[in-house]
Length: 327
Image (cartoon, rainbow, N blue to C red; front, side, top):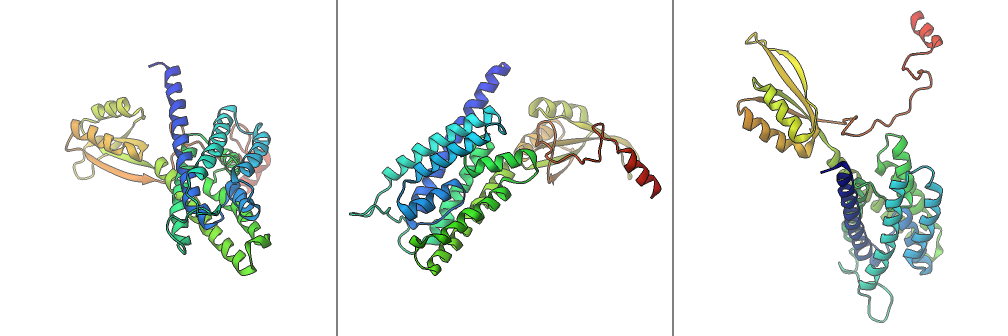
């Protein structure tokens, strides 16, 4: 298979999973969040606040805000990312509209039927935000975005080593807090209650977003002790596309020299690596450990600012050298 075909299949896979994630998001929002008039974060949350207060359709507010943000983000995000964002924004617009048409309403009113029954606001919140948070993670993991504050989060995440959930958390506080200033939502007590529920949605949704994304990115480290280290290294390199580092070891009890293989891989590749080791050397000694993060080719990129006192070649400036020498 050529590189062009691989890239095409990768792009198709991204769009398929982005679409599935958006379908799940629409389902969770319309079925579990909107019938109970629960406020969420993001542009969708801002659109819900407008909808609850004025009756203005959620998809219209969502489209207006997103178009504005997409224009502003054009220079920061690449066209490849932006095209997927435009697709996701347009797809979610139609999915929200279609989902609301399918959602049953209370006879003689425009209110949606509460699937879990009256009074189950918090349970509906947990289910709905679990679905929406997981769906956002699916979209992000496939190089997409639902637009809005996700664009802001993606821009920040591109330059800084902050999780998407942390960025969205800060932005969502302002959006959820805005519902307190709408007298249409009732008394101060009722508005405060809506804010508390909104904060709960933010916590659950962002927790699920980070949980699903980190689970997908989780990496492990293998230390493999075996006399057949060359065969194992060749098999791992061939079947996993990961490099293998050979370390020199010395057995304290046996006094013999030996080779140790060090392998960094995604957690979901662990079973394949164990199978390869067992096929070649069932008696191999293997140590597997979880690592907090792996950065470099084939893994995550390093997202930190370069200190100004460091030169492009990584050397300290003359003044800094003099200061260190005097210490």
